[in-house]
Image (cartoon, rainbow, N blue to C red; front, side, top):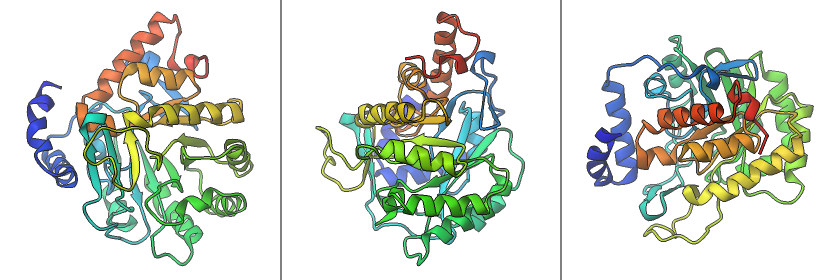
Length: 340
């Protein structure tokens, strides 16, 4: 944390996307460290996968699967790479990534920029030391987006501990339409037909209407989805103080917290605990993570908070969760899920 606080003014002197690319380049050169040992009380099994800590890195940071092992070494219990599309694509025009420092937030309209699944596949073939998930999406110009997801499931399953079907990004036109009635059933039926034994999660948006959580849960259960990630960035704009507040794109970070928590509770209520939930959006402290877990999340993910606090945030949150488990008199973090 001290090192990051010293480096942060230099990092923030660069525009957000250039700083991100520099961070990835530095991590690639850094010595690889073993994943730290976590308190035994943090260990849990979700969808048949052993997680040493429930604190994971959300998709979007390591889009091309270049530094997944380094992030495990930094203290994340698991890492989700991507979003990866079947073919490489440049994404949306720049500028497309904005820090909102006064709000501890980020707005992005990246548009699934990545080097394609085949390039990432080669990097992920080396056996990792922990749980690395792969988030897959559809190319912007695809004539058949369902086919793109099927291709992603088939291509990336051999190197993924789990796969995430990302239909909730607001930055690919029409993508969120795959959450609609009928379209979602068609997509998940095709994914079910193509999948292997690798667990499959579905990432949903926080911007949903009345009855949508119940409908999405029913479809996920009907088609054998192993978990729901709640939720992606939002198109909503709560009051913001930063210069870039008016930029288009998905908002993440602290202002997303209330909406993401509300969405998680809605999905917990809709599912009755029948499907694992992964909470994401505005998580920056151990108390934030504990609140999501007690609201029904078996795991949590973060990304935007790391921009402001550095990669040490993951270990700090994990240690804080272990303390809360002990204070609550529980044997494991899993016993806290859904108790709040």
